Length: 114
Image (cartoon, rainbow, N blue to C red; front, side, top):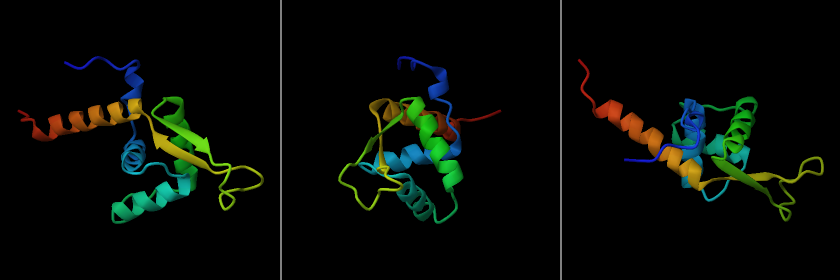
């Protein structure tokens, strides 16, 4: 039996938050625009996350400690208005939550309902 997460709210993800975690589980680290492009590309453009949605998702996942970010001081291309680009990566807790969400989905998909 698995131990409970520190907060049940960590397990509650929107579908778009789940897509972001899935993408970050496949990429070593990525910035917001790159995530939007990859998610769109790998879902045959069926999932479209725009800037106005992506950055609040990244902020929420960071607050839940499911992802973290670093600013790359050597990334001259990624500098905007003197600020360095944020590169996001999934945390061990993020991987655990993603695995549990997938396990819940599998349980429903394989379950028999009466």
